[in-house]
Image (cartoon, rainbow, N blue to C red; front, side, top):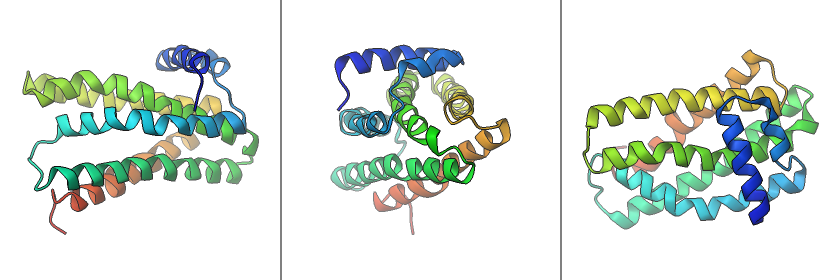
Length: 191
């Protein structure tokens, strides 16, 4: 579990990352130990994630317990799967020494994604300005793609096209595999 000092420094780094400032690297422990500690964010962020998902769900699930269990499993799976993709990509591109730092910062970026999604989820959840909430969601999605691509370019030292490809793999895994399966498990989609 990250310490309070590490959390404070990481928040400064996330702010710099959101501004596309290359100095964000200096705020993170990019060692293997730092990468392992970054997985300590998984559990504290899970209730916030489940709350955001609940607010953004447009249809009532058949079972609240099943819905939350399916979304929690998808959340955990997404936390575990993509770091292996980063490790594989770093190995294939001879960036093994940068893989731990890329994983650590990618995991810390979950704090940033939660903070960015909160306003849109609140608007959508309470039915306030649905058009504005949808536009805000789209803007956050595009911004997150750019920020994630920048993260990989700097932290893992990838070329623009390599970084874009890695972001595309992340989007496909999450949007076309993990979350649709969780919707099916939650009873929101027919098989």
